[in-house]
Length: 297
Image 1 (spheres, rainbow, N blue to C red):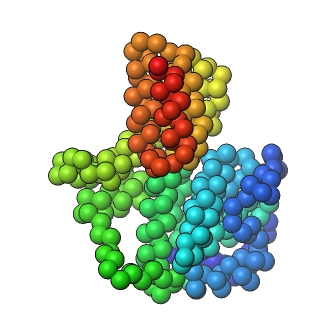
Image 2 (tube, rainbow, N blue to C red; image 1 turned 120 degrees about the vertical axis):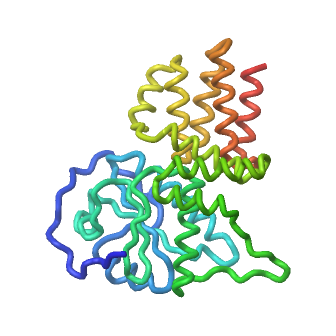
Image 3 (cartoon, rainbow, N blue to C red; image 1 turned 180 degrees about the horizontal axis):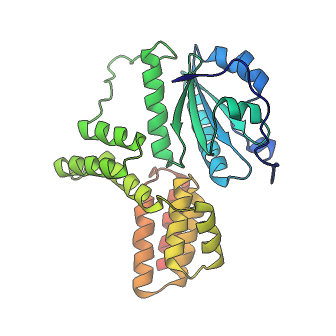
């Protein structure tokens, strides 16, 4: 952990602001030098503060901000409340804050616990991976007396992670996709039909496929070449990793309609694999399954 400087240095002009994000699209509290020092840091003694550093120049950072915002919104409606605070740092408009947080690239996610800054990731994680990281941070902070873990209700049993799952999550936090894949494979070898093991393995496979891709560029290329099934699959992977399920599914369903023979089979199998990454009860998934069936038959 590192402490935030008490006196911010001179402003650094990172870039002129382009394509500004609308206020209604922002997630969490917009962080400034003033409210960071006066409100956010003191609050971090009672609750974990999660900051997402973003820029209008980075669609990926805006996608991560939106995903965190949806998680905070979902957590807030729970009886016990969210249990954590969410803030967003526009590095273009708040260069002093960006400098103090030592932001080198976006997206960058940070946790603040008792005024100590903890880097979380500098990548574009999948939504399930993002949830796993957040839950672990909240759990570790609760052990230090920051926030709390909801007391178990009568008769409730504390969820216990499998040893292979712990190994996989630890590897994912380090960006070790090969290690995570091996751990999930160990779990599947022991329990071939375990749904969590199958989901985890599918998530890691997705991370392998998108690792090193420029998602913004891939999506632009795919939009310009709708008949290119390889680009369609890569773009759909990038979109689902950003939490944009609807766009991902729509892209591949459109590609299925255009394709035939082995290409159509490959696209269908890829799409079904992406379906496995989404909650079966999600209306977007239910609708996409119906649309795929119509496209095929």
